[in-house]
Length: 139
Image 1 (cartoon, one colour):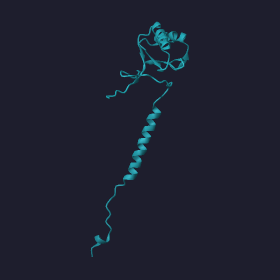
Image 2 (cartoon, rainbow, N blue to C red; image 1 turned 90 degrees about the vertical axis):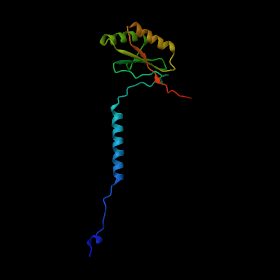
Image 3 (cartoon, one colour; image 1 turned 120 degrees about the vertical axis):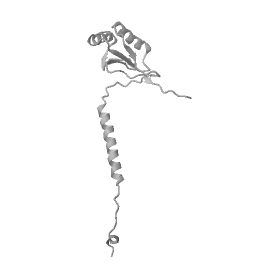
Image 4 (cartoon, helix red, strand yellow; image 1 turned 180 degrees about the vertical axis):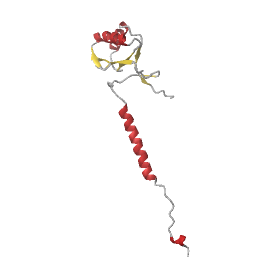
């Protein structure tokens, strides 16, 4: 009598469904954890597009001009007359600081020029204008 025939031979099975669940759980975990690591303290402005757009450097101060004409110097709402004073204070703390002007595309052009003029009168040598990267189409 052959005992091997009486025993049910079961080959090991690889359970793929629990493994897929674990992989999706890890994917969601890492996506959520990276989103919480990014500190987003921005004022919503609709930036114009440019093909040569670059991201701003960490040693920079954002000067935001909203569509309504409000000026935000590093997240603080100030009048136009205070832009020169605030830029001079920032330049006294760090001489090679970069000022990034972020203006809504619907903002009055004269307001942007006035802010730029105040920054130049304060002695700022490094001023950039923030833009969004324009997608190039080959059509």
